[in-house]
Length: 182
Image 1: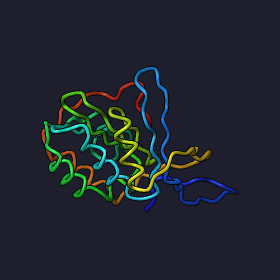
Image 2: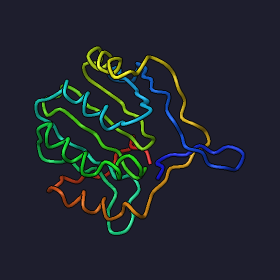
Image 3: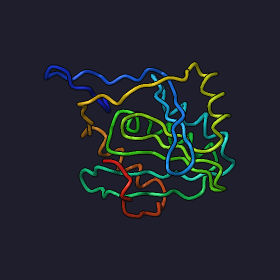
Image 4: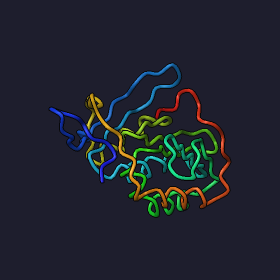
């Protein structure tokens, strides 16, 4: 199942990323935008190692289905093993469905990683360490564009997974923020 497709000539094709990263300026701190060709959640976890030792997850449900409710769901404090276990359990849902984002944040403010609905990763924090790690994983500095037009896919097959995910902990829920996509 695909999270994102590009539209061309009235047909849909898989959207594929070129395995690159780029530094971007923002109104706040600089960040990296990362377009991994494969295993984006493994990339996410490898970068999280530089921001620990304690984390929180922020599950951002942009497009609810069934009985779920949109919003930002923050986990209790976690160790990296807890995050990796959560990601492994819900890997297919997180990588194949575009209804959500997954953020990993340092409880001590050392960095934030955002895996967003297009399959891209935004990394805030120790950018030089992130860049070295990405190069070791075979990513290279480069450019890319989100295909236009494109389609996000929300799969009925993952509705139960999202409900199970939201039952995992006592998440602290807040409303979506103006900058959240969706």
